[in-house]
Length: 246
Image (cartoon, rainbow, N blue to C red; front, side, top):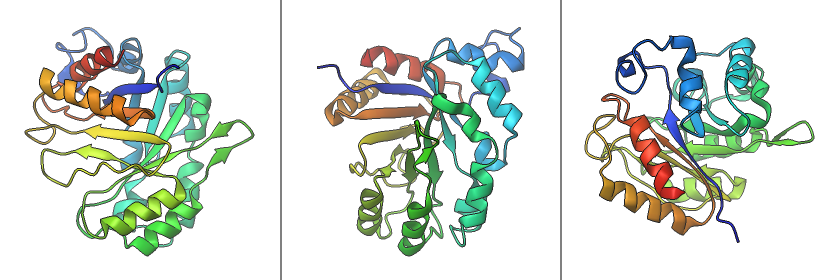
């Protein structure tokens, strides 16, 4: 029997400091995504966390990438950090109507990152999870993952996510927040922000081997995104892990 698919990529891709290193010096900024898509299977869209994107932007990303490429999309911080999931109906509808569904079959999970301080109450989280859309049209299932950066009420949060079949993100943040490894959905979602220093440095061969073993042991479809972008190590580490998992 074939192993479940593992999608390995990077968190964001538009980093000027990567030019002359990962990106060729003469690569136009508009061609960065296409370059990444020629080497990796997926990216995590971070720009959507900071502001709503235009439908034409999502359409351009769709057209820029090959068949089989996938996007995870990070949900709006207006919902998660500013409103702390209070009265989420209208902001959620606005976000979902911003054009993200133009990614069609290339759309992977939505990521909802909760703040470390002042995280939404479990009651708010439960209500929010209940209203998340699970499909678009007849053929496009929608899945969701939540990154939790606080141990407060984690057992209750885990059960809420499990009851809604939403993945609890396995998040390596160099000790800046707890790492939770709890199965709450039929897929897994991993964010690797840096093992020794947040957003900096690379993952050693030993660490990548351990992550590969961990991921194989889960035996479910898994999405993995490297966010150690400050020193430009994320895409290299993503390519190395992808090779191990092949």
